[in-house]
Amino acid sequence: MFAPKSQYPIAMIQRLTVLLSCTLGLIACGDRTPAPRNLADLPAARTSWSLAAASTERGLEIFGFQGMGPGLRRSDASLDIFAYSVRDDAWRSVGKFPEEAGRLSTSATLVGRGIWIGGGYTLEQDGTENTMAGDYAFDPQTDTLQPLEGLGARIDDTVAVAWQNRYVLYVGGWMQYNTSQDVQVFDTETALIELTEPIPLALAGHAGALIDNHIVICDGMTATPGPDGKPVFAISNACFLGTLGSTVAELKWESIPPHPGKPRYRMAAAGTRQHGTRVVFAGGAEQPYSYNGKAFDGSALTLSDEVFSFDLEKRQWHQHAALPVPITDVRSLPEANGELFVMGGLRPGGVVSQRAFAFQLSKPRLPE
Image 1 (tube, rainbow, N blue to C red):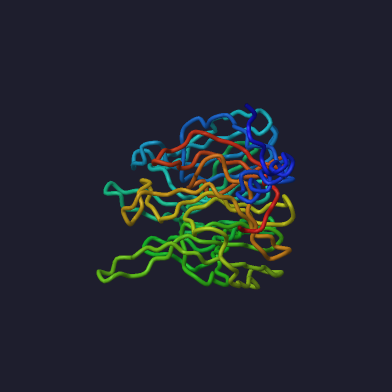
Image 2 (cartoon, rainbow, N blue to C red; image 1 turned 120 degrees about the vertical axis):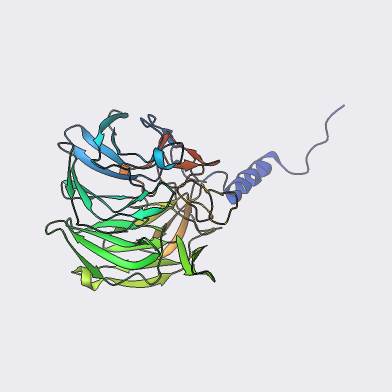
């Protein structure tokens, strides 16, 4: 007995299968982007830490500062400094911060030959978060850390970007009791702070990056006073484009459309020239959450594996192939050799990750 013939030719079925796969986003048609590759595991699981890449005599290294360990408790706040060698795919322990308690949600920014570690918060015995002031200057050539007592930005959960190889701009963030609109400008030559044009909306846990004098900021959370005076947190889908002039005083902000998909909290971001000039975003959570990985509203935390970017030349959003795993609290995506690096972070189920991987940005496509 013969099987009945299909009413469609085999070649047509194959074309329809490929077309359906492209439509569903299961494959990127015409895109030969390599799959993400696994890297050496971190020396210890870390989330809510800060990352910055710098060239040293050991080649390009990605430095990781402080952060939270697997228990997500006050005692798990770390003082460690680790360094990852891109050339050797290996980690080393660099040292520790000279503090009694580790900081969470600091910002690490490469300016000139130094990495500036600013802000962050510590945890009190009762879990209260204490936003810190005082920056550190880290020399990646000598692995030395210089505290700048009483100086720097008092902020955490901010977006920090380097500008003109001299300034660090801290855009919004959490300032002890509330979200902030301030854009604090730290001059690494004079160690002085000034304010410039504020971001249009007070945000914390947002994400963003700078490239070619343009800053793209998205999402995070807002905080408004509730009936009892305590802040009520809400996810934000607002996105803003900041353009810098010849001085920081000339910073101007404008609203841009929300990115594809749902708004996120504590996404990772980077400025890149992969597929043009763009700011790329990845991961994040659908709800604002605390240092212990629990959503403020008590719901189960939902993480994202989505990757999208804002094309600064075309002024439009694009989507890219997803991450291999949902992730949040990575905050930055250091770039090296055409790859973006994901180090640690918080994974589904409240797992503090010890894993690292690198990925190339797939061919951009318009949002579905």
